[in-house]
Image (cartoon, rainbow over the protein chains, first blue to last red):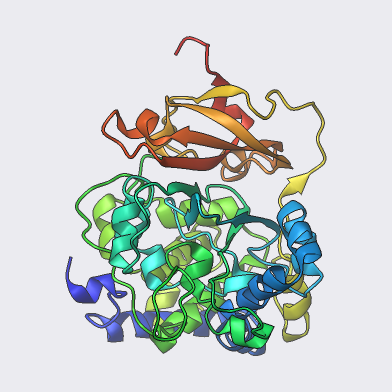
Length: 208
Length: 223
């Protein structure tokens, strides 16, 4: 597989596919099956407004507020809705907590299921064959591709999103962040931390 | 179907290559097809599971050489053509060649927020009690339907443990065929990696899938 294909395969036949999508959009519009203004609004919604910043707010609130954390783990769909994070591809949520003994990682081996309201749309690697094939058989190897090496005695749990449950990983709060505001904490909670392919790292430092 | 989309455990795809500061979309046409596919679903001519099947139902060579959004385009074209909404000739011509078909509705600018903030919950009221309880030992059935299923090959025939119970949810295998939502109990089933991949597997690895009750049988049942 070429480098280009791994990154979406769009460059090799950009004009052909671009023309076809344009033609399809024209036909759909002229037949009255779509509202062009709705198309633009949908793109804006998922490109500009919904993304992993939402999930980072959830994680930092859980780190700071034990009562919220408890609700987040026991009734995640409702706890997330209370912050305004609900809807398409987040209708039924599960939040799984990392501990010193257990690391959680999320995949969709069959397609690209991903918790849109808290993380936005999935990155290309999450939808790619290398990740989907490897996460369930060699997660430690897949983690090394992200520069993450877990202690040999850490148990790994991989959640394959085969139904409509959507999973968010609650990472561990790193030491050295005592007294940080939720806003500052959110800067170290990356998208990958909440999929389980990353760990929160202090600026310039290593993960715990 | 046993398609190329069912990738768990397949070797040879190479390393995962994360992209730094990755944009949400990599080209304008990706933005368009993403939104067109979601909006066209609002016409009510197919459901979630039919949509998934339209994307995975293609020769492995085709699935593996198309990019993610190229598969979305191919799946959308197939569904539009099958239902008589848009023909391949119309896409080739870039204009309608016949009268539009009556559809349930369209996604308008004014209802985008409401529709997407609500989503499409799949949980339904239960009509029968759950067959399995948390902690029960079960086995994923060895099934190989040529139609849509969400039981990946790597767990079929393998023993696992019921870990969570999620209520009754729309059953993809019938819903994709237009044979009804047929809600079934949904469980998280946890497998020890050695039961999936053999004695050499990572002893500290456990993998779970979310499985509907018809995918499961008691572990002691002959198979």
